[in-house]
Amino acid sequence: MSDEPGQTSGAVQDSHHDDLEGYGGGHVQARHGRVNKWLLIVYTIMFLWALYYGITYWGGLGPGLDY
Image (spheres, rainbow, N blue to C red):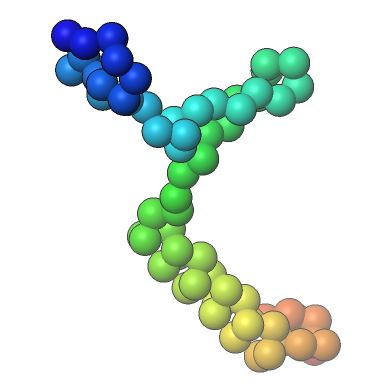
């Protein structure tokens, strides 16, 4: 076990991504991360569905309400 700079004593050093940031006087905490691939796929599908729905029913009363 060495006390020299740059040497670790077997413990895993935390990266800056694990640091918590506090907001609102410590009531809200956030950490840096990444968005999972499955969630990006869900976002893409929802965006494409919104485009389809907006183009298909633009200006009408909505599906089933055209009298």
